[in-house]
Structures are given as structure tokens and as C-alpha cells.
Length: 251
Ligand SMILES: [Ca+2]
Image (tube, rainbow, N blue to C red; front, side, top):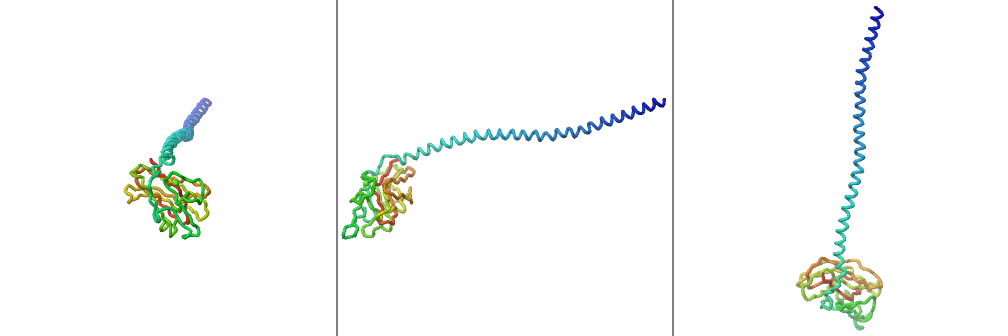
């Protein structure tokens, strides 16, 4: 009987031990469950990394699509500016003009100067020269010469009368600056427009010009405006500033 009692006691003790083990197992499994809980943020990390490429892929097409309309929107702007330069209706052709100072190009006789000259080319006859020449009236000298010049105070104003209010958007000056014989470029050319010939509004200007053996056009584009009078103002310091044609483009 004692043996049986001892066996029963052992069995009881073992069952207690097993019960303790069973209780501790779920206790240990709790942190084990927390482990997958910790892995949850890990799982969210791959989700974020997955979301990133999605965002990138979604941004790329958005950027491309957004750039395309911008480019396409620039094209019409460029094309709308082209007519300013390529317009071929010169509404100043054959029109009259006034010049400050002497009222004409620089003309000096032998009595007036050791360098006599006759630089009084017609500025609205449509005739231009591709190169430098000192022959009579091939070029028109804008000059601050105090005796016979047309730029009193260093500024020459030439006003072309178009005859009536006209929609214009570009003024042009044909000029040459070989950098020799006292021929320089103006320090500034400004364009102003008016309907009454009294009140002028400056619409364009330029302060830097080429130097070289070839003549060239300088274009002054501006927003289309109605004007009858177009003033070309030349600020000069050199003895001669050669021009031979002024044009005003309709547009
Ligand atoms: Ca001419």
C-alpha cells in the first residue's frame, strides 16, 4: 500500500509539474505572439518600400505629361513671335521722316573740314548696302558733329510719318559698324511710337551692337500697337554712326 501511495504521490507530483509546464508554455507563447506583432511593423516597412516605387512610377508619367503641355504651350508663343521678325510689309517704305539737328545726314564741304563727306542716304527708299562705302549718300551718318551734325547733345531723333494710324509690332534699323574711320555703333537705339506726333511711348531699345565688315538689320519687336509716328532715337559718341534704312513692320 505504501508503494501504491508513493506511486500515486509521484503521479500527482508529475501531473502538477506538467500542469505548471502547460501554464508556462502559454506564458512563453505570449512574447512569441509579440514577436509576430513586432514583425507587423516589419511587414509595413516592405509595404512602404512597395509604395515608394508606386509613387515614383506614378510621378514619372505625371511629370512627363505635365511637361508636354508646357512644351507645346511654348511652341505657339515662339511661333507668335516669329511674325514680328519675318513680317515683310514695311509700312515705312517711301514715307517721309524728320531728323533733329541739321535735319539730314552729315554733310561737310572742303571748306568745313579736311575730311569732306556727304553721308545722307535716303532712309526709307528700300535701298540698302551690304558693305561699307564712303561714296556719296551710300550711308547716312548719325553724328554729334557740332557744325553740321544731327545729334545735338549726343542724341539724334528720326521720326517716320506713316501717314495714318497703323498697327505695327516691329521697327528695324539697317546699320554697319566696321570699327574704323571714326565709325562706331550707337550706345543705344530706342524706339518710341505716337499717334499725334507729340506724345511718344518708348516700346523697345537696345544698347549693344555688332562690330564687323558686314551690314546687318537690328530688329526691335514689341507688342502690336497703333501708331502713325515712329521715332528712332540714336544716342551716339562716335564721329559717324552709319545707317542706311529704317523700316516699320505691320503687325
Ligand atoms: Ca536706304
